[in-house]
Length: 345
Image 1 (cartoon, helix red, strand yellow):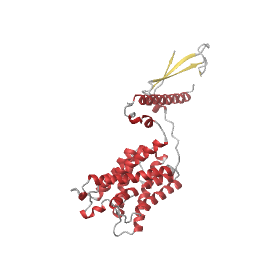
Image 2: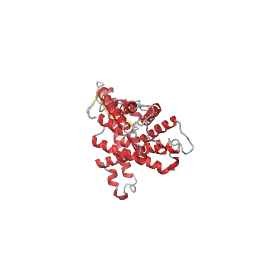
Image 3: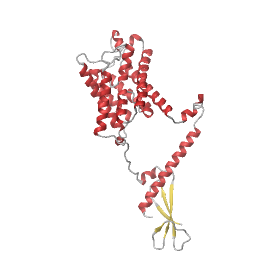
Image 4: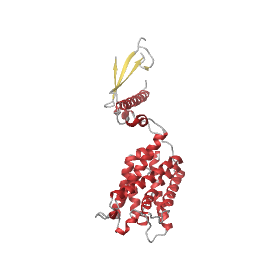
């Protein structure tokens, strides 16, 4: 067999071997996993099964918990009534790192939208259907309300403020700078959310999969930059759910429409432009791994292939040992150093 064909066949055999061992390992884990936890209340079949209802519940619960964490921790970082007065940069870093934590916690479950504007962008990109987006939207709004409510539960009433005690009813409520007009605030929120959505589009783009840096860190620092820059203008909401919860609990609705139309409009325009200009490929062809890379990760310590050499010195396949004049060869490929050796039997 020619060396190139032999190496290609060896690569294919090793890939099949790796896949086989992975399947056997997964089956073993599923069999040996303790059953007492999944058997409670008869949920064993539901937990291990697959289905639309289960996926919807998991996604909805993940978004609810993630958005609750965002509002709870983010607004908690704004409290000045407990003896520590946070500066602007501290507040923006708190929100950014909170986003990082949330994505790390639920990103693998629901992609961690935690923002109705991002969900709208996902629909434009074709990542989510309208029915799925409704599940995201309801979960995000409920989670935000619960997160702010939990903050009110654990914080004394007179201490839940970012300044003076008479401003307690405005705590964590996003608002425009006194010198800004409503249109200016709308534009700032739209541009900031458009930039955030641009980052989301690039992260979801299959052409960007080879960049192995941390996705949670990408979004964390993106939020820090945007909040630091635009916070003095509008409070840098970027998120209708984040603005809705404090407004609901404190009954403060001034300029609330800006924090809906601005972020959703910015995300819609940004995602549409990204899709129209750059395109959103469904998948990207991956390069075939080199044999040396597979050898280093192969489970089998050696790989062997038998060949027959004819009297004229040519390698032949499908030849039995009974034919006269042919020599039986055994090729052994150790996986430690990737070197091959030939032995005559």
